[in-house]
Length: 176
Image (cartoon, rainbow, N blue to C red; front, side, top):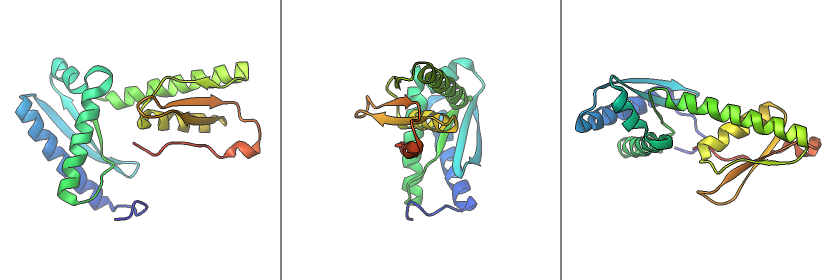
């Protein structure tokens, strides 16, 4: 399937089903109790693990979300192996991504305020592509300009005051 082709809701639900089965298997292996919730959001399959035990949840999120990021990558590979197509599946654990999005939104607003007050560009700390995309979206919504710089894993976002209509082209990252 070409990257620009939209998947049907049935295909997205199938990806979510495959992902849920895979994650249930992993939870069984790890002997963690939890529920799996599935759905489609913004044309992407989404699976959330809701564990009964706070200790289990902390282990499934990891420090700075490293474990949930790894679970997402492994689950995307499992879906791709079954469907033959790349998936943009989102895996969340106990609302971690929602909290992370809110922190990134607040961080972007702080950078915007600083750039507006000083008139100078503001560099943020290195982020992954998912995090950079959230920042770019907030910056664009606020009528400002942002650009990513650097090489992975040290790629970061700079927030600028929009100088003119010529600056309307934002240099943003692909979704992660």
